[in-house]
Length: 587
Ligand code: ATP
Ligand code: MG
Image (cartoon, rainbow, N blue to C red; front, side):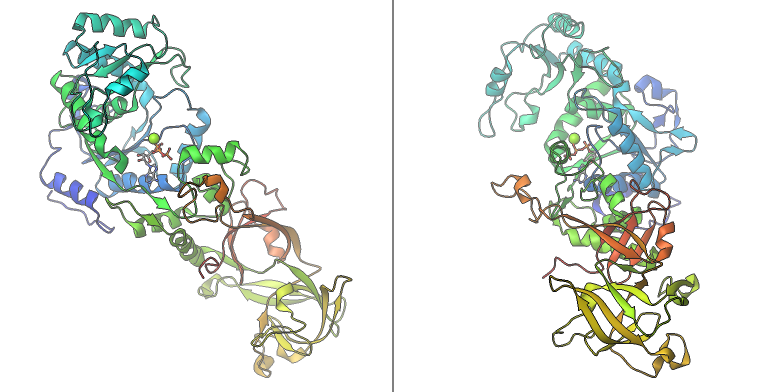
């Protein structure tokens, strides 16, 4: 590569492979016809000006989770940084659990993370099910070249004859069917002449291979199922291990990046593509598969199967429940796309499985939100504070900075009046040593306002404090010359009771109480944290009434909050706690 562009991000082993391939001109002869297709289709295409092609290939059988974000930033990030294209591909070859709802949420989330699939006039949004015709054709070609056969063993017989890690497999009694017989049977499978599960098409490789995946893997099965894209056209469907390499090749993918559990599938990936290329069906150079370590994150589960269980069994309110590690849930919780970018940069890409601490993700969100969220005042557990010597009908303006590190963002008015809300924990009748906030006869500054002195308090019949009485010192207002005349150690936040916006705030905690839910012999459901959400009625500064869905704020001293994107009625927003200011879980 001559005009090498600066690569902005930390390098990783996959980037190193891409750079080497580009340097060695591995893809120089590659052509691209503008749409996916076989060798003949691409042969008349243009030399592919884009240098690499990657893909993000989710199966639309669930919502994307935080693990997918790693794959999205990796694949789309490579394409962006090496002047390539990343295909958004729905791997929808399994009819059973797929639906349009999932397709829609996946496209929404990839775009939310900042990526798209329209580049240079090319729309690279693809559906693997569009390749069913080619896949069928490719399967017949394998039969014609003696590379596959129809097996009529039962599932049990097949399992037994597959052998084990230490024992070689045994050839199926149907392995030597003639090409003509196999073609006839495979066509009958397609035409619905055989029952579901009565036979499969298998690649003919080596039942004694030390790699079990090479012991004649099944590549097509009979399954009478309605498909969300192709309807009832097919009653046979390709297996994932067959479909995926073919999809990559038709799309001229250069680097097919997947998680480590597919490492043992790589020999079959290469075997299959080479057979189809020999038969003239696929264009060279063929795609290559590379594996990286999947993201494992403490305190969450990143498996669609488990997430589906949490949703279907109603442990959470839905796919976008703010406690779920789905991207839809994280977004509603108030996590931001920039935070995920920072996170994926920080954890890197490696070839060794490991666990990432959930706090790393939270720290990334804090870092971004600290920079971008405007500051607001919120009283989450309110008690009254009455300034007895303040005129009952008087209201005056106090000025609070919108962002302490960004004076250019200015200040906003917060009204002060005789009756305020303060935090219950900011008053102590019998203060412990070192308590600097409000106590009988003590003095404290009302942040952005006056110094007040406590002159009494009231309790309800249960002994809970309901009201604190104070007197204010008129010359001590923040920002006036007298503000320094009296030094006090404590500084508490407040909102004016007659101006406050009273509303619902949801305080979220972790959904699981164990860092590795379901570890050992446990059921992961037994590790659910029973107190993962607390709904409170809070008193907020009046300007928060104008918050729009997905506006982010720092509630001073409390953490980062977001206006819920679903339950916000205009003029009546409710708020979700995204993350506390500091990690409350670290001991
Ligand atoms: P799950 O195991 O949760 O069902 P999956 O791998 O079956 O996930 P797909 O829809 O097939 O889900 O995944 C799309 C892409 O996202 C794949 O390329 C896969 O490798 C990647 N991916 C899935 N989970 C993770 C993860 N935890 N970390 C990194 N990448 C992941
Ligand atoms: Mg999968």
